Image (cartoon, rainbow, N blue to C red):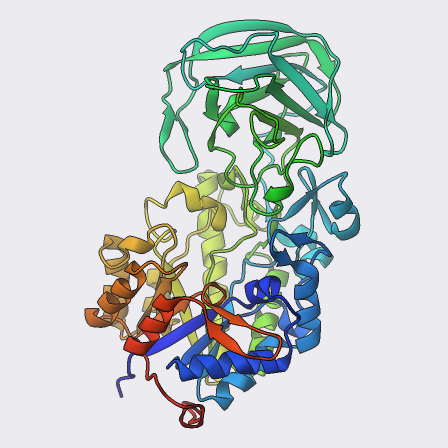
Amino acid sequence: MTRPFTLEVLVDFLDDALRADHVWRARDVDGLMRALAELGVRRVSWAYYADERGGWRMPEFADGESSWARATATYRSLGHPLRVAVEAGHRYGMEVYAYYKPYETGVAMVAPEGSPEARTSGLLPHAGGRLCALDPFVVAHPHLRIQRRADDLPEGTGPICAIRLVKRDDAPTRVTAGHLQLWASVDNYRYERAAVPFTLTETVEPAPRDVADCGGAAVTRRGDPVRVLTLSGFRLDDPYLLVTTDFPDGPADFAHSGTALITALDAEGREVPGCIATGAGAWLAGKVDFRRWGLIFDYGWGSAVIALDAPNASGRDGFIAFARGRNPYLPAALCETEPAVQAFWLACLDAALDAGVDGVDFREENHCTHTDEPDAYGFNPVVLSRVTPGEDLRAAAARVRGEAYTAFLRAAKARLSARGVRLRYHLNMDHFRQDPPPCRALAYPANLHFDWRRWMAEGLLDEAVLRSYQLRRTMLTDAVGAEMIAQCRAQGIPIAFNHHVFDDDPWYLDEARRVIADGRFAGLILYENNNFTRTDAAGNCRVTLDVVRRICEEMGDSPRSTQSAQRSLR
């Protein structure tokens, strides 16, 4: 029997909990589900975050409008949010899927080493400070995270005795020795001016490699002439250093990709391994200030173009900072090739199944693989032990890890099928392609072949979702997306369209109309709930975006009463 076109909402509940003005209770979940049912929503996908274990270990502080302490209180209040959501959804005649992201076992939130936030909420060390929001399993088993290769790092480097600052081109610069300043810190908190004299040498040299920004746009081509400022004649043992200028205004002219702008050298002229901070960040970015707080290193967008000589009064612009050493692990993502990790993932699925879900959505995209050098990760000893001598290392790692991930999906499929639960996979157009957008590299584990065509051929997918973040406005016309849809249709796999909605742009309604008229899709998923509803402390839920209301009126069964919504779809 052909299933009708289904209107869905994806609830990434941690965001709802973080941004609410109160601690959620069971009646709030009930109010949300009741309101969605009345809008004509027939299925809800509810994100799983260690629900049966009380949620993640989260910090005590707020980050802008997000209160992590309140989110912790919400998970404690509900006990098992996914179970509460399933019970409420079923009361109002909706199916409830668990939204499961195996690689999302924390976020790449790092509080500077010397900050109050790190002292009160730090869980594991990471470049620049301490990770603050992690699944308890990661805290207990940090060695199971995805590991960096070590064979490309020099050994035995000493104190920093020279710094090379590289401009994107060879045009003259206003930066002179009199304008440059060195700052340093022992704990990445409240940097101080380093009272060290230095000699400045200015040269023009050929660029040693191609450099692109975080969006993939070319910044410098190999062999192009670039201007280099070399500071030498000093010795710095501090683990953190920062280079800036004293210009109070612009126009700035010394710009380059952040990850290419600075190189630190020891007394022998060898490169000192390290990572950089540019003043930006994904979490806690509003706190960044090198004078009054600290910096976020290795956060994933370090290759963005910055200007060294921009004004720095804010403490978050006009500098480049360097931290000695590289992160040995990604922030939180676990290595799929480790047997203990696969056992943990399956235990998480068991918890979702025990909550009574109707299906499980799988998504590999995440918020805890952030790094400025994604290609360097994925080389755990268990992976290397399965590499054939003579194989290209990165290609071999991708093969080994891809086989391990496919084995996990097979086990997951068997687990779900035994309970009569459907497996649905997010086919991600951003990453499952030959030319993935560079700006999304931080959101996926690199050096891993996600063999989605094989999964279909083996019958592992009961349903699928077409998803993209970076390419979301071309999903209906993209060639890779078209192949994914065609493969699903050939295999008889229903495919839903994941529709991001951020604001009241009328484009969202137009796109929703195109999706339902397209004829190839089994449903439309509105993503995500926190963007377009608010639930108050009395359990009353309201839609905050008119465009969502319009989509529901046109696509759903609305208007329909709460009483009529209580028919069961199971």
